[in-house]
Image (cartoon, rainbow, N blue to C red; front, side):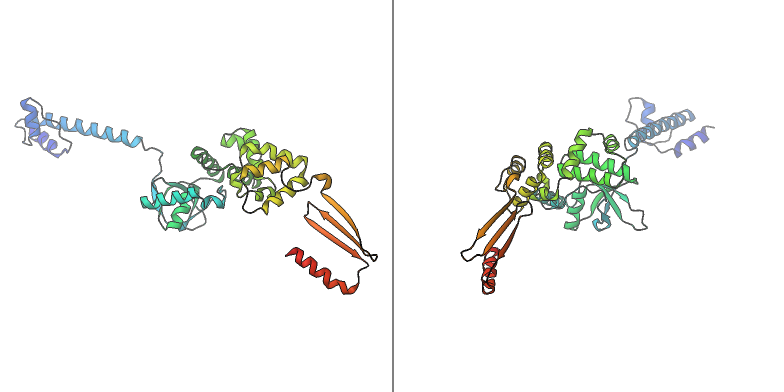
Length: 333
């Protein structure tokens, strides 16, 4: 029996324990075979106990990674933007984006992974869940992008994208509003209230975001970039438009032509406080009559909202047509 125990003990591979003061421990760690069956049994039990402890320790380490997703490097050409993408094109050309690109280039690629989901279209392509700017940077630099891959439905994708963006705090108010407006317009959520509940924001905050995204195009284009818009301006802008839409739109069109563009705060002030040179509503439309020496008559009609001038001339000699044409051409030059 002692011989059989000895054979079993010699088959067990386990980490060796530190040397102990006792003669028995010395025998176990020197690699020499014990001379008795009792010694072999002690060696077998000792090694088995160490192996069990090691297995337990490894299980504890693996438990820390439970539920985590493996990261893999992907060809950025095979990754597309999400249909719920919230990044405005101007966010890919600003100084912050250039700094991000420089950092990724210096690191030889992304250190912090983006997150994607496989496209269920039979291809080997992926759709960005979050990390659109990091993906774009790798695309422009020709570097692989580090990505976590997970299967998600549209609603889960949207909620996770929103949560990640709000944690990073680098998404602009207009971009947030655009994302929420797109989700509602495409029926991803049945109502604004349901959307607010899903992403965990206050309904009034959602209302501000949507109001920014749905400002008239002329108002948005009055600014150098819609990314300059701020939440605290929403109430005044919407109020001014509701009170006098013709005046606000007229001012906005005038500001669009300003070169260079005024600072965002100045534009906001002009839109909401009546700044600029556009006539007030009472004189938005003007007409003037002109009389000539030989019975000629002229009428000028000006529409500030449409920014148009209409000229009507009566009792004009045919020979003066070319003269009138030349004067208007000079005026328009």
